[in-house]
Figure (cartoon, one colour):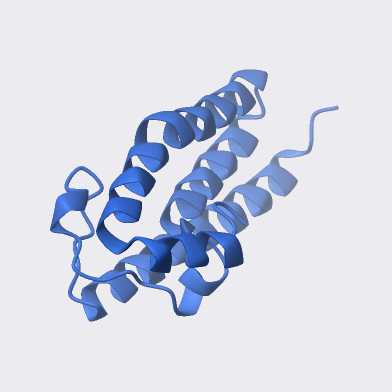
Length: 123
């Protein structure tokens, strides 16, 4: 079933807007904690942010990116968009989040383990 153009637009704007907001709020939390936002440099992490959005999801910025892609995919209304979303989440889990978590576990030890027990990776 193909949704009408207006419904796809509303869904795309809502998903994309919520996704962008999650990204911006997540970045702001890292800036306030004076830690790196750069996911390619986890060794520059100075603080384990556990408040705000990070009390609900360990990766709200990645959730935001997934929502933005979901909005775009919904707007396109093509099955390839769903495949792109699944591929993004799989890639992030394997090649971005897993290495980040290994480094954070090494850096913060038991504190990070307790955080992982308390807060889900995605939602």
